[in-house]
Image (cartoon, rainbow, N blue to C red; front, side, top):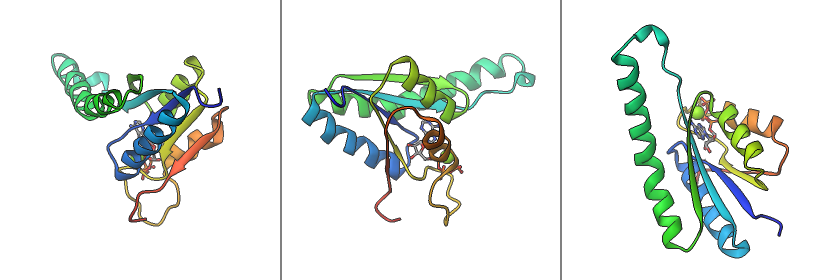
Length: 144
Ligand code: ATP
Ligand code: MG
């Protein structure tokens, strides 16, 4: 089957929300599994304890609040859905999961939450497009 495993990169932006909706339509057609990926920033060690653990716990909680409702809604549509929350640069997280889970397609937004208005692609989508070994589908938000 052409698209059995579809990775969707989620940062909460309107473009990434559209990426999820594209993935939903495609997964229904191809009976694919969707892997939702979110990366949160690495916390600097110098913060020390208990700040370090608290900051990481907050990042993970935010990530769950972002990803879990999406996963639930996809599952309610009968789509097998896996979630991956990773620490570190988003492009590395996306490329690592794509590699280790041997996904057939990556769907992501053209832009994300950082909005340096005029750029066509954000830095994460640029890096993923440059290095991915599988096809990448890039989705623009409606207002762009
Ligand atoms: P920049 O981050 O370079 O300022 P930007 O935020 O506008 O620019 P990107 O970050 O490249 O653009 O976002 C493009 C897409 O990459 C998003 O729509 C989303 O699909 C994915 N993405 C960005 N950040 C993350 C993240 N932390 N975790 C998972 N996916 C992400
Ligand atoms: Mg960004």
